[in-house]
Image (cartoon, rainbow, N blue to C red; front, side, top):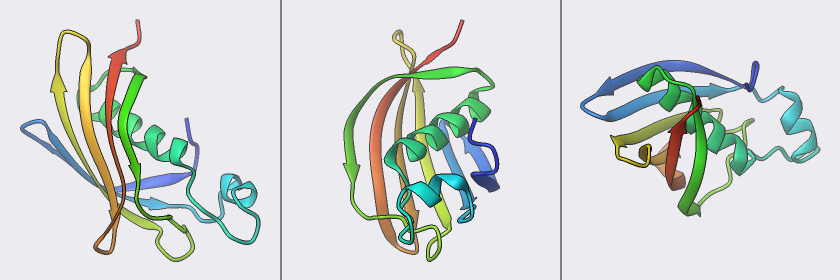
Length: 121
């Protein structure tokens, strides 16, 4: 959905834990508007990346049903920190797929979230 927004450089799913490295495209149009001359990763775009990586691991089309415990802990400037390490714990429940996800750059945790994803029918 986010065409040319990021590239997945590393992807590993093992026993319900997904580890990935993504490289952001600092030239993407999203950053021209958020914010001009001071690009910052929109939180909703991080949620979309978590969803897309989860879809890849589960081989299912998903939608975000709800998010809880969303913690934005640091701004992500794609010009200075374009490489993000992503960790997503995925567990299947009767409600769908619960994820606990985080994104870090260098040693800084930028975002943590718990969410419920459901399969699109």
